[in-house]
Image (tube, one colour):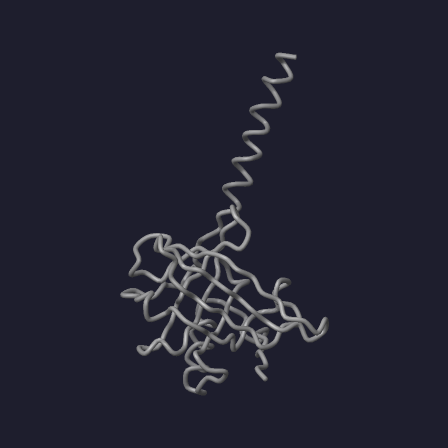
Length: 179
């Protein structure tokens, strides 16, 4: 029995450590830089998803919004909502975001299923906080957000060009419908 504990306990702890390490993928893609002098207070509120890649968790979704509000402890409440046009029902996910380092750098980690966190990096934003380009932890995740259901062509092109330079395949973006 002692041999069993000598083997199982270290192997179990090692497996848990491996899972925990890989659950905290809060990086930023190589070549991407998070916005500096970021102001979370200006970022709070409702954003409309303009474009994204075809993620499993947003499959068949239109009318997608993200709403951010400040929690009393300084974290950010994240409320994502979208309409699944195949199943004909609204889906909502509620999560939490925290800054990775400094609150003036737009590098956050977000979780909808703790203890699993993912990177949320604002890599471009206009000076009025009306349009944002958000990168995940890798080149698999990218969002274009707007305070309204449309985006000016100049901003669209600016974000697409920036994403291409980083290495994103922008041809695969899905342009979200809002009705």
